[in-house]
Length: 158
Image (cartoon, rainbow, N blue to C red; front, top):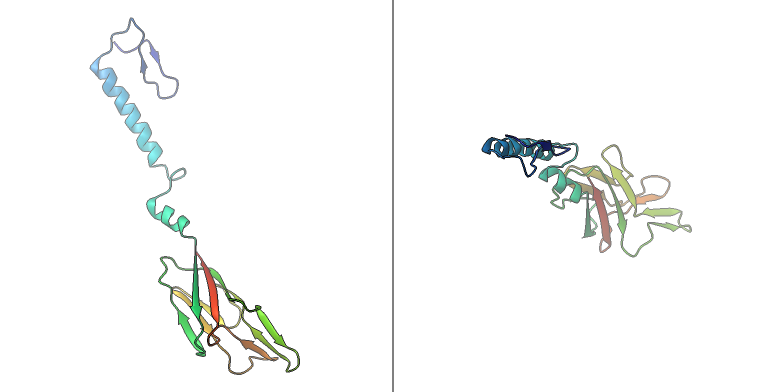
């Protein structure tokens, strides 16, 4: 005979002293528990997959490189995601250096994204392409994202 009472949530057997448990009661309770746990663990609204966990744990990448003076250079960090947004800036230099006497501006700081970027940096699926101006890009502005001997930091966001 099954139990006289049931648990409130899963309706498992809750035997009283006068009840006589049977094997079928235990088998049915195990099926109820297994079904409930399976439904819970497979619920993607409350649980994430291992791939999702890796993706969320690695939301950004911070890298550095030393400028070599080339007019165009690809920086490929070997990341495990396709970046969508980023920024680049020099170490120990102001983001924009202006020489008012010669009416020039050297731009060391840029934002870049999959939808558009500041002049001088292009976002790729595997990293970024940086540019170094040898002549003004207009109005005395220069792209300075690969200045020879200058250290840079870049941050790529998933």
